[in-house]
Length: 576
Ligand code: NOJ
Image (tube, rainbow, N blue to C red; front, side, top):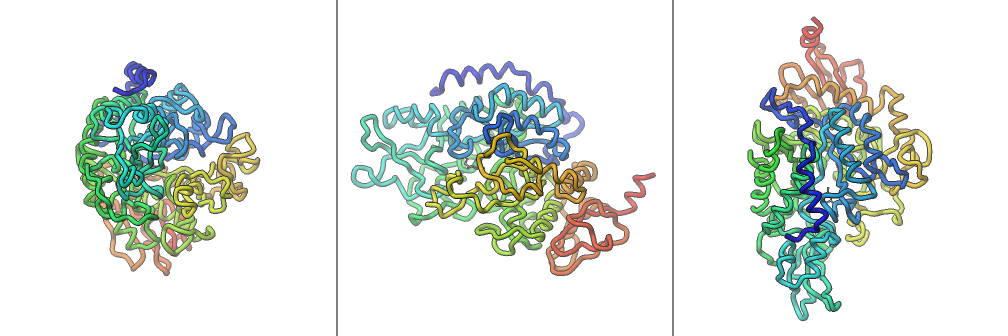
């Protein structure tokens, strides 16, 4: 097996770590699992909190802020990759799967993080990046230095080029990040060699998931982190590991950007083999006393394809990215929610509702405009803030888990004016600077009202610049304002943890005026979101548990707002 000895030793050592033993098994009480209604908080490590003052967030910074996450009222943290990495795609280019990048800290720091989270009652979800590694990973380096057709090259997709001298790529396939999906290698004597496939950046060669050695190696990597106490994995770009042995041209134009959610079937994405791999990982997840959680980043072209990932022996959940791509419109939301919920299998798989991530434009910015959910974004408006809160009321009222990306609880907006010298996202460069990329949603968090980095770091410059206007929305500012978005999230999450019964599966939409969504869960709870142009009046017999902004005359949900309501008889009964 081609794997460096050091890494292999770390994997073996992990068997003796006590991690998973320490966690109480809540499953004894019920057949329901912790993820069936958990709220995950997504930490983008580089931008969360910086303890060593180098301008980049790190593990120690995250540990120091765990109480903040706990007080928010969430159940788990999903943390973006901490692996050793050249950081050409923010850590999604992994050089060593069983070590931590010094930029973030040490393996001991990661263990402290896992333990400290557990002590606070927070589960830890690892970002598991299996479709590709870094081109600097010893596996790929070893493949490069091995001859064509060698066992080492079988770990990846190496192909001869077309045309005279093999100068043209093997076919016309395109990368999701822009440009061709093939990059040519150099032979030992500096002559041009074979080409390798990369769905993302050229620094991220795709691994060959039909290779038994790759399969076995990643089983061990999973166990390594589970043995350290990690409670689950978010499976990065998981649909991409399914590939067919079919290298025909797809008819892509030279400037084409491959979009898996839009394009029809292609041989290099979402092929049948992915499901064998998922079943295999699920078996590993079940080896533990408390089953580990597998939630997929599944981006596929339709709901039938999605449902295949949620079968009872595959993933327990997927993130609902489609929800973050739709416009502010009642029918669009209702249809998308029904569709995604319909892909789940009652009692076996659930959706993890999410409106935002480190890959999406910030919610407040998306809803500040009425046009398409993607593309050029204008100024942030009070309407955008109201809609974002209302959308979270809806997402957090749905059966299943939910995920909140860091900073959403502060109502942060997309930073659109980062100077081009500071932009880092490979998408910006691979699209010839046509696409701004994802840096605008990855700007370091504002913790304090003052100081050059608003409390993110003692250093005078953060890895991406923060807007000074974020002083007004910093954690410290919002903690002192009972009407802030932060207090809104805290209160909504506190209600969520008490009012929903785990086993409520059905989504019921009540009849309502056009443009108003009324979601009922159980006999007493309703969530109203007003997408229409008219105010919507709620009944006298309901108390308002939470609302995106105070209800006019305590009964009127204004346009672009939402509320959680509970029948008064329930409240009276509870008081007795
Ligand atoms: C999805 C991740 O969320 C994204 O940030 C990353 O660039 C790609 N996968 C490639 O790993």
